[in-house]
Image (cartoon, rainbow, N blue to C red; front, side, top):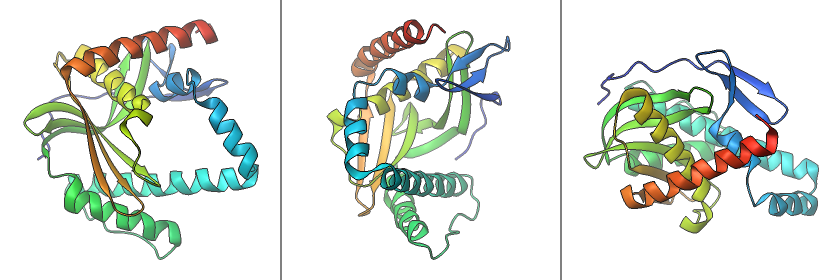
Length: 226
């Protein structure tokens, strides 16, 4: 399934005041895609209200649990797709949740992937942005940028535009770096009830979202004087 068609760079990360950055080929720090999106998000007020409601300690616990579950699931998917032994989970609560989600991905959620060009691939555009994409390859016979997401509950499509913008940013970087023509973004999501949902961005929407991503990048640049 894995065909190593491209030589992906190893990204060198640095942390700055506004978030995660990577050094481009000229050793100039450029923001990560997620840093750009979080720095220009319009939903921060809702997150602040949520944190005030539940308290800092509980908010940090919830965030850490979600991060730990997501990391464990991503690692198991990567190992599975690399034909490695992937089913390594402890008996802790978080690990058992991650195991259930990973099993759902592997049994039902990855069937559309027929060819993989890279997993956890570094992508970077000099002077602009960088990031690491979960998977690049062929999904349902179409070159695609594929992302794996975990969730407490399956999200509505209109709530996850930033996921689509992230995928478009990665796909555009891949196209510039390697001369590809990826215009499909696939978000594969499994929640804690082991419900699977597929979201696909096709070319017309991809072009629209690419313009939105560029506007967010410009907004971030103006806001933080990068």
